[in-house]
Length: 159
Image (cartoon, rainbow, N blue to C red; front, side, top):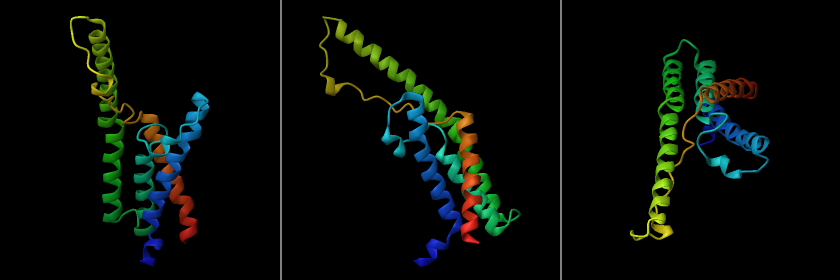
């Protein structure tokens, strides 16, 4: 069990996730002047913790196993897929959630305004879809850079 603490790639990836998630809180405060601690456990936003994790993992594997190893190739390809997904599919799903939430709000407003229809109670209305799912390309890029930096800095501890 003690060997798990010597797993440099694992700890680099986990630390990169933690740092990226924590950074979201002060960045949100700078933009809105409100503290939102729930960002520590949320998806989306600046920087991408998914990108931070996979680049930290790939970098750490490359340092430990060699950048020509099959293990690095696997980590790098999975990282590219995750980062592409974060900036593509998940981002578009979030954009669709915005549109669907607006449609639901407008439909509920229409129902409330019409006297001939029975209006459903508030608790029966549809829950809003999570809109902050994916990332803008800059959020993925910064997250990726952060992951590489975390792995490089943590490597000095594991030498």
